[in-house]
Each structure stands twice: as C-alpha cells, then as structure tokens.
Figure (cartoon, one colour):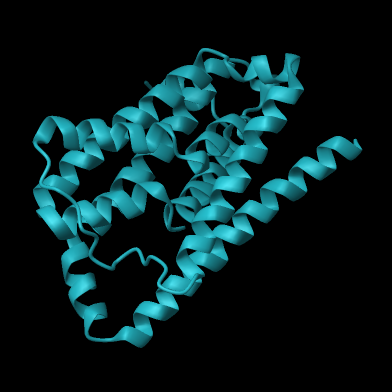
Amino acid sequence: MDALFSAVDAHAMLGIAAVATGMVLTPGPNMIYLVSRSIVQGRRAGLLSLTGVALGFLVYLAAVTAGITAVFAVVPLLYTVIKLAGAAYLLWLAWQAVRPGGIAVFAPQQLPQDPPRRLITMGFLTCLLNPKIAIMYVSLLPQFVVPARGHVAAQSLVLGLTQIAIALTVNGLIAMSAGTIASFLAHRPAWLRIQRYAMGTVLAGLALNIAADRAKAVAA
C-alpha cells in the first residue's frame, strides 16, 4: 500500500484534492438528486442513493486506470464532443436554476417513494451521466499524473480514490443535513433565492471554463 501511494507526487495529490473539493461543493446533478432524496424520503434514502453514486465513481475510476483516456488522444474529436456536450448540459442546469420559478438545490422536490434497489440504481445512473464527473476523470485527473514517475495506472488509481473519498464525505454530510438546511431556507425565501442564483452562476462559470479550454486546444 505504501508503494502504491509513493508513486503519486505529493503536489499532485494536493492538487486533485483541491479540484475535487471545489467540484463537489459546486451544485450539480449528484447533489441535487441526493438532497431531493434525503428531503423527500429521509436520510437513509439519501445514503442509499449515495451508494449508487459511489459505484458510478468506481466505474469512471476503473476506466481511467485502464487507460481509456488514451482513446481521446487518438480521436481528439470525440474528446471535444464530450466536453462540449458537458458544457451545454451545465449551461442548461444553470438556466434551470436562475429562470423564473427555477429549481434550488434545497427546495423540496416532489419525488415518488423508491425502494432501496431503485435508489441505488438511480444514484448510479445520475453519477454515470453527470458531465461534471466525466470531465473530472477524462480531462482534469490525467493532468495530475506524472508519467516520469512511472506507474501511471497506480497514480490514476490513487488520485481517483482521493477524489472519491472527498466527494463521498462531502455528499454524505450534505445528505445527512439536507432536511435541516431545507427547513431553515423554507422560512427564509431571500436566502433560497441567493442559493439558487449562486448555483446558476457557478454552473455557468464552469461551463464557460470548459468551452474556453476547448478554444485553446483548437487554437493550439
């Protein structure tokens, strides 16, 4: 185990931890689903949904560790399409947040009471189809791998596990406290509006950053 972690540069570990923390605190599909489930169906449902999200993370981690990102080096157009689709989806989420009558993360959503298996399945699919997570693993995580240190797969594995640990810890805390936060905001509509507009701004900013990154790649 020590040899596994020694393959990763300490600065790379800190870098991916910072990126992972910033992204998990940015409202997105995973957070919206987990919060909605926790509010509507209770903490246990939120944590079961989080189990599905964790499985989705592991699928991405397995793909990156296996070297799937090499496909995008061979077919750069595919990489560009995925990034553009992710940016467009984030912009759509931003509009859903700021439009009149838009959604807010901690506003109770009308959802059916789902059994445990469906909660896990929906959490898994939500994570797997989340463009933020796809971008994290396809674009951001490989930037922290240092080929000169060797053991590229091991580096990817450790960095991915670091991201997963941070994401699950933060999302778990949010799911456990979602009901309390929602109750607080329900009696303070001004705070709810601020949260909604902050969410839209962050999502739009992330989308624009993705688009700008694409523009630089094309220019190069």
